[in-house]
Length: 304
Image (cartoon, rainbow, N blue to C red; front, side, top):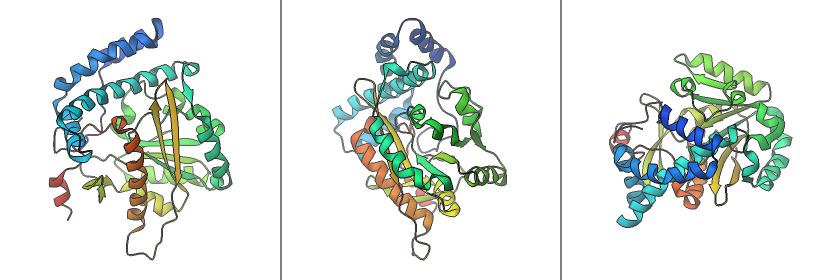
């Protein structure tokens, strides 16, 4: 997590011993014990992660317009939801899938629409919402064709977030853009799929500015520029957690961009993405896990 008014560094927060403790509880005692321990741990993170707490306060007060008391409660629940998702990732990677429920109708309906265009390859643009990997086992053969683009620091971290099968299909954003661009092109040419997050960037990356939840915000240019450039189907994909260990999936196929418009193709895709993102956040605001000041007026003023 970054300090206020700094952008994300490319590394995710997490402690080895804390993760190991939860892993041990899940494996040897049960999921319930990990969820129980999470209540005091979530409270601990409010003072222990001041930059993240400030960012969440800004999110609930200025973007969601919550009152002070409601914002304080939401911050606590936000940390708890984040811990829940991390626990679920560990449990799912340990083969505890039968303990969860998945809305397979949403996946089946999407695949019926998607199969006719899947031979071209496609780009899935997601966000740091919920647990995007939770439904991978529901995709069947499609899951094995999904390749995940992420920053080098992320790819090098040994998280429990990713299964061994997923780790083998990670495309790391190296210092030489030509390297990963060729890998992405090769993947798409083979009729396979690129998965990338569209709501986080690191310092020095090119960005796009747009109105998001009533305030100007910066988004990474890369996912939207690449999607428009390669001219393959673009799907916005989110997986969110709901009561009783239930996961729901949301898929939206983006409308084709217009090259003769006064709005750039990348910005056209970003506007569609923001519409989808805002709708998901209106339903599950506590599952957006960008723990830094997303609306940074100082950064935005530099590109105007």
